[in-house]
Image 1 (cartoon, helix red, strand yellow):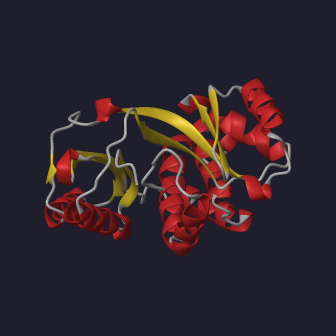
Image 2: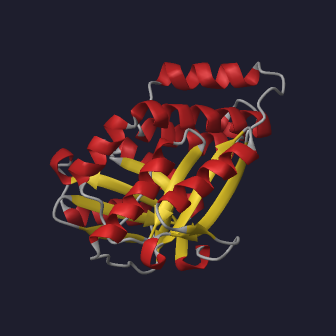
Amino acid sequence: MSGHSKFANIKHKKEKNDAAKGKIFTIIGREIAVAVKEGGPDPANNFKLAQVIAKAKANNMPNDTIERGIKKAAGDDGNVNYEYVTYEGYGPNGIAIIVDALTDNKNRTAANVRNAFTKGQGNIGTQGCVSYMFDKRGQIIIDKEECDMEADEMMMLALDAGAEDFGEEEDSFEILTAPDDCETVRKALEDAGIAMVSAEVTMIPQNYVDLTDETAIKNLQKTLDLLEDDDDVQGVYHNWNE
């Protein structure tokens, strides 16, 4: 859910996903609740809910858990009071960081995010101070070890489904889409039997920054760890070339 470097090491990404699965399910549960409140419980008529369900499936959330979340939110009678907030700032050596949160208490979340930046020797900035350095894209990552399809065939499948770009690394394929096309491409890959490590709309840096100073790396990791551990934080994006 965070630390989108050019290609996060697949095994590392899986380990992080497994370790954070409980939190990921909590995050997605909140997103389902908000989507249902805003557009109703039918994903056929609620595009935002359809996107959240796709994210849930990409993270291996069981179908019955998804359905229970939708039913609970539909019967909540307006008791869901979460709202989306975004923070932008700088880590050590000017590393750009964006934090997306979904919270029922903006004061608590703001204080926790500010604390995470401060403890890592960084600082919160104004809205827009770093977001111009990122592009909002749909990103799908596929582990080569779990995919029998050749690169050319995979690329044609993705592009035919509406993807904008295709990349290959030693252990993975990366597919990039326009934000609104991510679900369509994900569904095409799912229908073709392709297992995905992740499929989400994310913020991808236009350029990456290397860090060589051990203290700066340690401080940045402290900020990222504190943000990852915060239950209100939905996503953390940065331009550190890990």
